[in-house]
Image (cartoon, rainbow, N blue to C red; front, side, top):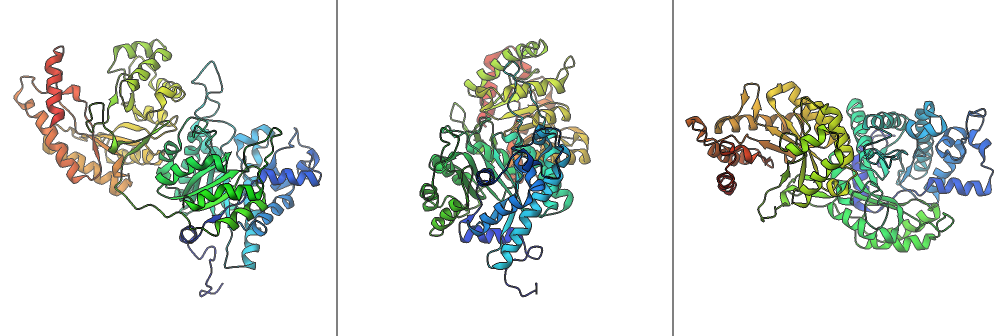
Length: 608
């Protein structure tokens, strides 16, 4: 194309800028269901075991009928024909690749793991070809390929065993490995956008987004990322129990260009949930619902007119930027939705506000908005699931009684803890195994998992092990410059990629900060490294400037309380958006056993 060619040219122009312009000028169109179209094709043509195999897999060792993704290799004309219908009949701006199950995890059911890269590559290549053909016919309306990344048929947050809540049939690292292979194939095949979709377990989505982040960093490419969750019923929660707001809070660190919901429900049932997503999302929003709820035969009854009518409320209220269809929808459904959407303006991006720490368990928690049971602006961290803070908890963990240990966590939440601290540091315990087991059980216990976790350990590998089992956004406690600047940066970078908030202790290579000036110096140095070099969100940093013991009889300890208060004031001034944490019981440790005095000291200290 000549330089003056006025329309979008792939490879010349910024796709991110073009999509931004598209999403802010009109409601854009995604496609509809691939599975439905394959089923419809089978009604009019033969599509049995022999056709699924094609010539390529004629002598395959097991049944493959129903493996829709392999059709991109064995029957490419069927898949490309479906892509074309969505572009030409439906008028879609974006079409999704036929790769919903194209990971080695899902393909294990068909013993087709070695063909995963090829499936993704061919699916994307077929979509790329037809998008380019249709775009060439009308360059004013360029068409784009969305690389579809499905949830797999395993879940990181839910136990497959009724007897053992800590059992899992897949790990975070296995999911990352599977998704990375898929991503490479999709991008090599010509994908424009990567979309993690139909998320019923946010931990799986976090693994996919981690893999995308690693790939983009390694390749130095800028590929827009969309994310779409699935709320399984009218409770408005994913299968793994998260609300829509908690789901978004858990994945927003990946900086998706668009976020929304799809599948499980019809458009009319999605109304309250897409409204809530549109209120909290800082990026563009999308929705692609089913054609109603399934009937007794497993089919979908909503006509194109029905689904257009049901989606009109999204358009009228300005809740979305991109719309499409999921199960039961066809090019005619997409055409009807597009014609209805043309009369309405897209959702406007929200104004940029003050950065806030936004954590999540099964429910979300904006730390800046929290008040405790006394009405004071403190976030209460329950520390009874900490071996160092509870003899009872220690005995239960050492005895392997995780069920009774979970009761301690439940009681803390009921008593007002906003966050649950988990610490299993003990010389008699395999901390790595104990942390993973406790977290895996805790995430399946709704009365515990509804609040965010604080993963607390003296060894970094232990907190990382726990982090990989958290579908929400937790706090990691802690890192510090004590390990040296190089390792500090490496640890902080890894935690940023996983989306965790962090507690940073006022330690450096020379030791613990005791005086006011040392607390300020170390925290400011840590802040500058984290924000300027690691690019860590400042609102996700919690400094612990060390609450030290007063009243010991030693004169040099007399100012420790005042030093902490003064240092806190200064740190908040010179390190914008950070939070301050402290182990308040340390302050009065010299009066252990005399609770009246200890409580009085704590009360005065917290007042100031």
